[in-house]
Image 1: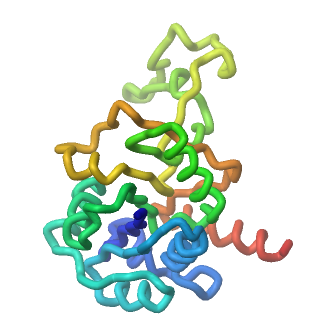
Image 2 (image 1 turned 135 degrees about the vertical axis):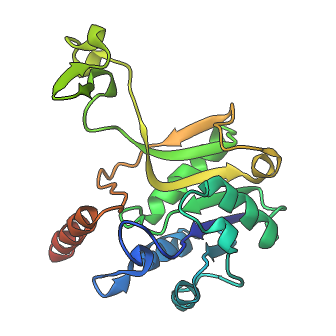
Length: 228
């Protein structure tokens, strides 16, 4: 069995009610729920939330949300791994082979991304898979600031071409897969030895954290829909 957990707490700090704001007349979280359901690889799609409003909306769009998350696990400093670990317990998912954590703002992730990532997870016999993207600029050529001055953090790479440097990837805030046994046994969220990655072909990976992110998402979705 494979289940999907969508963590969607209330009281988001930078954008109020971020997870249920309407985009194209649908709450943001509905996109993630639809993607998970349409992938047809999950036995259960469950939303973990501390909000009765999010619970109601999630059920409307086809997800399970049988109980509310405790306030202890709903603060902005609680690691998402602790939420997933708790979800395995309270939703009785310990017999699942894998758990997918799909973030509610993963608007540009589609069902094929989920399917291909799941196939790679099994093919590589990994305990963990993270959906990643390459940074816009290479981290090894980053500046640091001291007062009004800037300096290369790593001067020895200042003249290197980006293509000559090792590849870097960032967690793009869309989804991850975990082997359930690893979740149960792990005491922290450090990468297990058998970890792999999935890089989606779609480069429109925007982790919605600010009003500017939200504005860009709305513009992109409007442009995409106008071409359909």
